[in-house]
Amino acid sequence: MESDTYTGAVEGARKTIILRSLDGRKKAADSQLAYRVWLTVRRLAVFLVGIWIMSYGIVCVVKAHLGAAPWDVLHLGIALHTGLSFGRVQQMAGLVILLTACLILKKWPSFGSIANMVLVGEFCDWIIRWQLVPEWQHLAARIGLFVVGIAVWGFGTGIYIESRLGAGPRDWLMLALHQTTGWAIRWVRTFLEIFAVAVGFALGGPFSAGTIVFSLSIGHSTEYGLRVAAKLCNRFVKGGETYETVH
Image 1 (cartoon, rainbow, N blue to C red):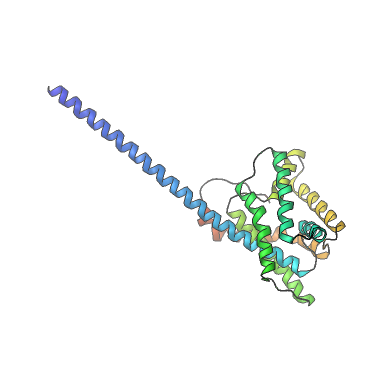
Image 2: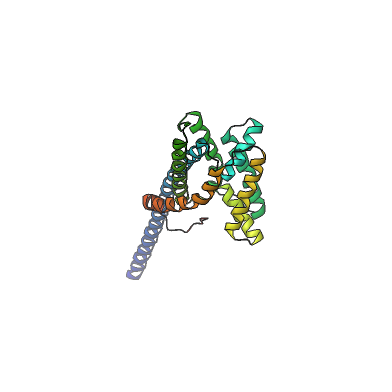
């Protein structure tokens, strides 16, 4: 009789321990899920801020009228012949580029790549429509706007990369061609930008000295932007995992 009582007590204790263990695991899982959701929300906020700042820099460079960035020479050249807005052309070109990269890589794009494609064009159109960037005629003012544009563009790029939600369509294409051809990323990027400028210039896009200055300086601006963004945003986006960044 005493043996049966002892056995029942042991069995009851074992069940209690198991139930507590399961309950603890459930709470840990719920806590981890809540953390992941909150981390994603924070990263999305950082991503949106970065895309907006970068878009403002893009419009500053365009509005300076000293020569657009290589890809924007193409975008503006297409816009001249289609009647579409600058931002809408960015989106359409981004879609074609992203689909091409996905076919080459044989993989689906990340959320960040799709959001980048949609939002940069949309934000640029809003900034132009709301006249948030001034139109200046004086050369000194336009040079100042151009320099500010490059700095803001690089800073915004650093912030959106720091969100760790994925690269933009053109970076995807650059990676795809790098993996397919074996060329160094710097040469793939150079080839793509020369191609974009050549086609854009043929279509009447604004190629000028500023295009060359931009190509030589945007890397330095982005590198500085990445360092600043890491200090400002790291505590908001840090999750312990590694992520892929194209330099």
